[in-house]
Image (cartoon, rainbow, N blue to C red):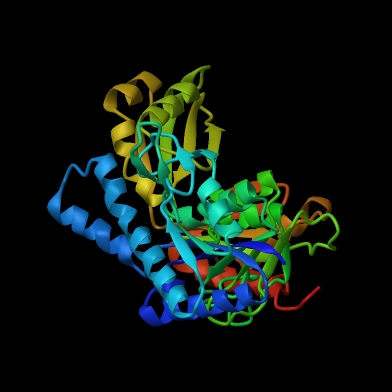
Length: 406
């Protein structure tokens, strides 16, 4: 008998038929003797629909009320899943994030988990029930409902698996696992049987949309066994491990991210403290920066380039005030949103020189110009024109023969 935490995303429970299919799968596992705790997202695009309604009725959208609104979708879904299980003769009990013991900070719209005490979930499991927990939510010290942000149901599932000391955390999505590339772009993309935490962290940070980056970080930190699989085919998916016992390929996968904006602050005075002023102001404006590159010009000034996602990028103009630019001695700020990031990731890249050069050669042969390069020991990322990103993914997948199992 295994204790499993299973997370089902919005597409997995998008309709009554899908909810019944999930309930049927869970019932089969229960009858085989497993203990199951479910984490469920809102149905389909319901969260987007709620956000759209909020835009129509309010311009201020207070954080507390937005969290109350957004988390309503998950509460609806857990009740429906329990009803479907009941019809199959399976006892089930639903729990909101606060009822499941998820304590968070007070940051609305993107709260962080500070403690998990799932005693009510444990009691339900001990009584032979399926515990169905609302994803992506908790309660603040002020007893306000909080939302963990986009992808928060993955984070809820990992946290619950850690708190329950579950044997595994299964993340069910609309894809069969982690692929060597987006199969919609590369038909020959291959599903990976296994991947290391480090590789998956780099992939999710570089644009792979599932699972959520934050959940992978926590799973790695907490030692939670992850299994990423499809809720539509129920086939075995991709297992995530430390990777120490695996013969890792030089390049495991290629991914891309179109949610990128490049900003360049030109001709900043080249003297100590200027970067601190610049990025301190961005922090004060609540802007999260990704890649940073600084170049010294011949005239002794420096250009500072950094990237953000599109949502953060919309705040940059407000953060870089005229007074700040004057203090920096900067001549101006240029922004390019018509770009994308293309990355290759592989656990053995650190011990195989020449991989970056092959990537650059492939892009050059495809007449794809590189705007900016960033690296880690197991990742190389290039900013390219957005309209060429998909071509770059296909070419790199071919170059490194990722359709062939190592």
